[in-house]
Length: 153
Image 1 (cartoon, rainbow, N blue to C red):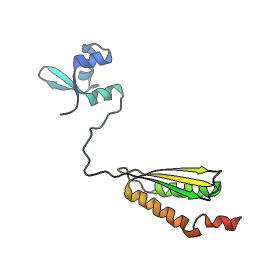
Image 2 (cartoon, rainbow, N blue to C red; image 1 turned 30 degrees about the vertical axis):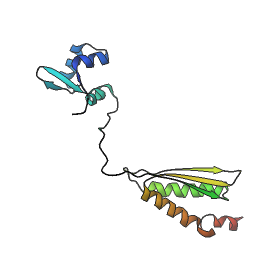
Image 3 (tube, rainbow, N blue to C red; image 1 turned 120 degrees about the vertical axis):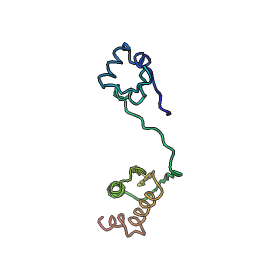
Image 4 (cartoon, rainbow, N blue to C red; image 1 turned 45 degrees about the vertical axis):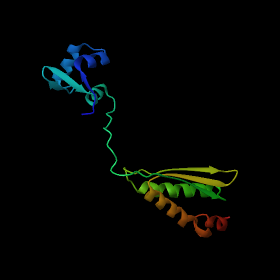
């Protein structure tokens, strides 16, 4: 058992209460405790629940190696409108796939002066590869999203 355990007196000291008050909380069911012989022991998680602190889950060893990929994609020759469209497309693509075990984070930055956009991708290898494939398909050879700009002008 790796979780910290406290006596009634220790909890009373931490909370600035009288030990009788802590015992009253235990009897009333407001504070969970384990009785060992004639004494109560309170787990840290139960004390945190009483005080409203978020309960910290016990750390578990990972099932296998964890891989996270960091990628920065630079796209040159992009005006604000095209950067907005490209950013919306990428973020929509990322938000359609939800894997809580491997979240994917994407940030976009546009430099108006240099007409340059950077897309920062952080996440699992497979999800990052999917985003890179999407970008490649959209930007490929002037036939993608940015190609329509020259025709519209």
